[in-house]
Length: 380
Image 1 (tube, rainbow, N blue to C red):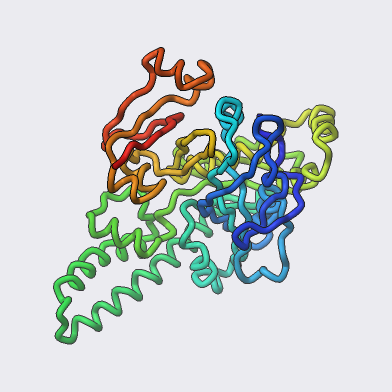
Image 2 (cartoon, one colour):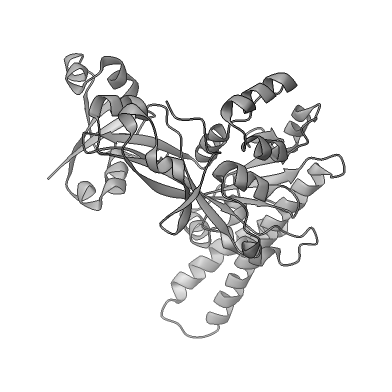
């Protein structure tokens, strides 16, 4: 089983980023093999004092570094996947490679909005935002969340408006790319108007040119997000915060200070504390999965005696997209994707039994990847 951790770490370095030591020798028995991790970036954002750095510490086990208070701090956390142990039992692989989130803690914003655009620019590459809001008695969580959303809008407006100004200046002169610049200007002006009205770009019907520009500019107000309300341990009504966000926005209420303290305990002591206090444990692994799902990503598997691996891919991707994510040569020479379901494989115990039960499928390049798919890309 996936160990109950994301808590008990001695920092190590992997690709220049702190990596929990326990993940370097993940598992017992069948899964005690070399482990590698491939990341996806998720940004933790919020106002000063919101508890965002406490969330970072709880998720990663990496202490917040005061020397990085004005820049970003990163650590990698593997995305938990309960089927990996079962695949290890079948294939006895030499290596396990887990897809991961690169958790990025950003500088806390000032409620005066001073310097917000510059600080938020540090996180534009993130695929998902985790907005942390203080839910204490002396703080107005609703006002904080609204104000922070305004900061995201203003940062995007500043970026778009400056680009429009540059295009307008360029169009005053004879230019070979005048047609392309005019097309970009026509696409950006409606986006600027929406942002000036204090409206987010999420949910808008966008033209292909606008979609391309939003991706290129990595606009924050268009990114998927989830909200974490940092509450006190004696919060009596955590559900009251649900109304702060639209139904489609994930929201979690977590006493982050308490969870960080408990993460330093042995698992048995922590369990006893929860039981004695009548508290429901908050699982950091669950939050990591929610982050992945909020970003619109999913996992698929490749498996064999050399390696068992989980891969991140945008939901709705095709077999050809998956092949390209594994290696561009697989996409160029794609013939078919031999596909089976991970639960079927673990239940039956071998690929031979999968084939005997006619559960191995040959999928074409336009096949849409499903949860639990194990792929073997055939190529020339």
